[in-house]
Image (cartoon, rainbow, N blue to C red; front, side, top):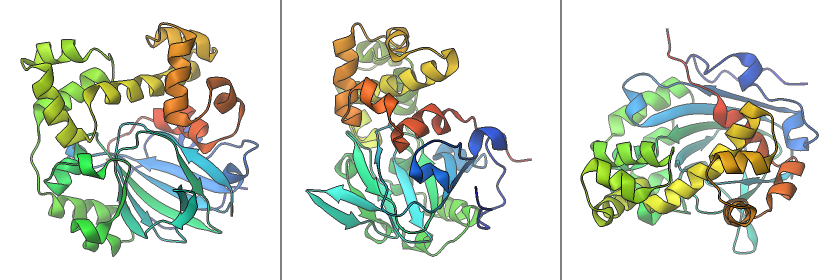
Length: 291
């Protein structure tokens, strides 16, 4: 039974409850979890794609998280998750910034999870911090190490949103942000650079500093994500969805699945991993504005 969520915010939910609350699956981690997403205010929207909350119990359940091209700020109001690093399980900080992921990350659920998350736009973390973020890629960095200590003291999404706006140190880079938008739709880096009036080398340098990875790798991640969206929308199998997303053969798709999920398509989609569930359901939720 889905439990009533803790009192976390007054922001308007993104989408309706049927599409944002946890759906029943065989996976233990989803049996007693509550998940919902919220749209940022207009000002925060230049940094934040959306906020999310997760609460529930699935002690010891191991799940994988896959790259999606966006960094996140995580605030644990309950027991933190553990991540599998260098052969060991390590407890994550209470409040931290998770840089861009380039491969799968294994997480182990605590006894009781109560998490507030900020899913930044691809360049949102760089704009918040006012610094290049490629050194944060594949890292979990405590908020205190980045001058974000005050965020760890906030317990609601409205408070976090105000804190983010107060701490913003960087400026927008419309060229890189537009490139990220273009590459989320098509993996042709050369075409994007040409349309934006810069060389591919110039775009790569600026892209790495603001997004945390090369434009080519970012485009691969976004195409990988689109496979799940197409499958959900069309109700078909992964082979047809892959072709629709521009994969030229099965080996091409399997290479990306192994790189980003650590599994073949058949294995990942047949299981109940949190990665599959978030990709096919949560990541397609459309944010709505607050009234």
